[in-house]
Each structure stands twice: as C-alpha cells, then as structure tokens.
Image 1 (cartoon, one colour):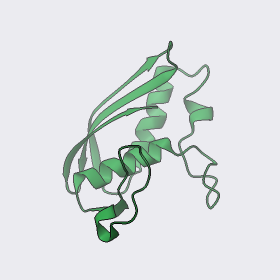
Image 2 (cartoon, rainbow, N blue to C red; image 1 turned 90 degrees about the horizontal axis):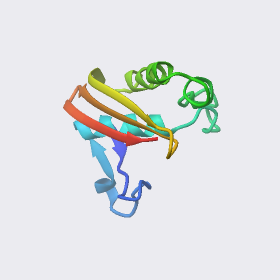
Image 3 (spheres, rainbow, N blue to C red; image 1 turned 60 degrees about the vertical axis):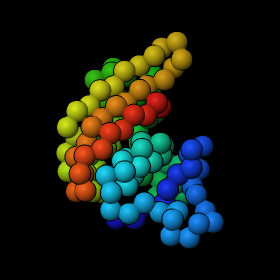
Image 4 (cartoon, one colour; image 1 turned 30 degrees about the vertical axis):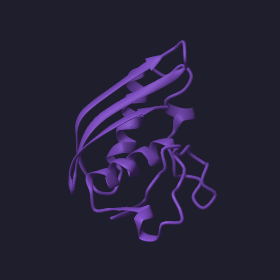
Amino acid sequence: MRYRALSESQDYTFGNGQANFLRNTPETVAQAVVTRLRLLTGEWFLDTEEGTAYQAGVLGKQTLETASAVIRERILGTQGLVEILQFDISENRDTRTLSVSAKIDTIYGPATIIEVL
C-alpha cells in the first residue's frame, strides 16, 4: 500500500521523489483513515458518492451514537484495516468539534488515530 505523506500543516508533500510516500506501514493505513474521515460526501468531483456523511449522520440533531456509527463505518471501510481495537468519540459543543480516537489493527501492525473534526 502506498499513500502520499502529509506535511505538518496537513498538505500533500512534493519535491522529494519517493520520500513523499508512506509505504506498507501502520502509519500508511492510519493516514488513509484520517484522509477518509476528512473527505465530505460529494466533495470529490470524480465520485460524488464517496466521503463521510457528515450532513446526514453526524451534524445537527444527530445523537453521538449515530455519529459514532457513521464514523466507525467509514474507518472500517479503509483499505489495509483489519479491525478497530479501541474507539472513542466525544463532542465539544463550545468549540463545535468532534474528537475521534481509535486504536486500529492494520495488515502491517497496530496504529493510533487522534483526530479533531
């Protein structure tokens, strides 16, 4: 599995040839999970069905359980993922953010994801 590495500012990295890619590591799958979580449904013009269903299942009057199910499903659909070992989701109504932390098992070994959406 090969995935373009992200910089500290979360942009794609360029200019370093093959060093710009993550390959066959737990971090490769973890970055794929994070990238999938950040993609909104309809945002990618080549496949408007692809993305996380934030409007339909996470935002608004949805319960935390409903949001959790949508996010878990999205994580489970990631290439290279074997299973979710631990999963936690919490919301901060003051900052209007959703925090997701997960320990995952990948085909390359375990990885941890911590993401604020």
